Length: 241
Image (cartoon, rainbow, N blue to C red; front, side, top):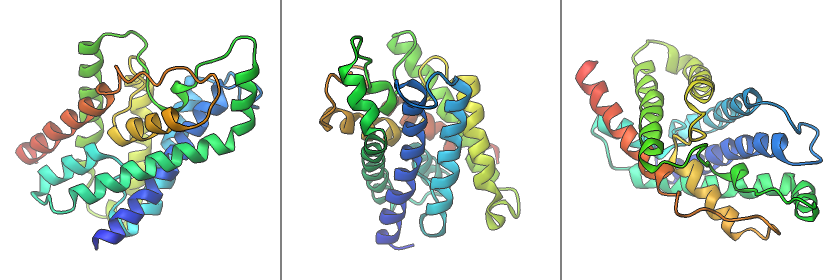
């Protein structure tokens, strides 16, 4: 896989992931959306389908990591670090572009939200926010949730035929849904630095009226936590498998 192939495919795959993921949150929380008021279950499945679509799109040329924590876990497990910066750069660009696409899809709803008597903050559509702000607890949650994502992904690769058939991507998508349902309550389960930071930057830059804060004081947790979580997943994989 050339650097160019990896970079472009990770942009495409991650942009699709964020378009679906941020899109389902926007659909559920924004007024004047036909999906307004749907549940957390809907959000978790929307993110799972985003992983499904994005990973299948990127898999032929880059393997469809879509997540710096996955990239780091794979690098530790394989010892191959050569293309890690290329993967992460593509993921960051893709996440930023996917957030912009989501804003364009829901442009009328964002406009209507800005004109409501009670304006709803919009950051939660783009990035994660904790249910209870406790930096230590939030960081631990992100570390554990990311280990719960990356270690199974590495282990799936040991099952003969999953990768060749493409079934592994479907299983990973189900895993993401499961993490959201089981572990997503405390922090919104970023489990992916690009998924949180790229859209947060987009939120800060987009001309969304009355959008509220981008909450940069919290932004380090969904970046550092998943990066920490991806590393021990790779270490445990090497030790146990």
